[in-house]
Image (spheres, rainbow, N blue to C red):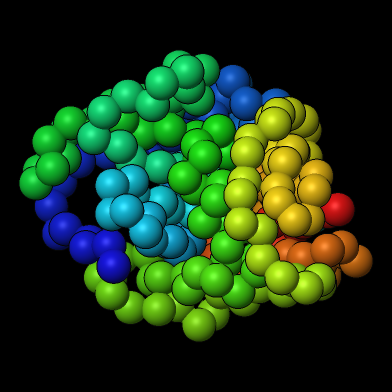
Length: 221
């Protein structure tokens, strides 16, 4: 089980994301940068205990709101925290930060990190238990997953990753299920999950205190 340290990280997570988000194709905030606030998320455990895995949600109150209710955009950002650089993942680096307990951490876009992807598929297939975002060793039952199919994927290989205006599509080669696509939702909405091989649902909270719930990830065969 991952241990959540009550300490500082410099620069902080929101600072790192504020510098990284504007270049993403799904970014919908002001041209001069977002105004971010923490809005929820959850964690997964790395079985080897080496990589931190977090599914963050941040709201952005910058720019003009695209809907009549002026609901801030909610971005879903899966991230990993590593104690050394991930080989071949230079384009996935969000930034580096100094952790008050663990020292320097390399923070990556988790859609390019094989450890996160393997555990995300395990969550979808019921083999991994979601954990509360800010509490050690505490499951988060509000995060639910659904999977249609028999058996588990014993091997998972990242084939390709494609960002678009709606999110990130991650193509995986698995055994015994063959080719699977993880559609990672980047701008969250309270829509019903589409009909698919599987999905993960979770909640987030907007600055006015309203709780929303919707799909974070959809699995397609």
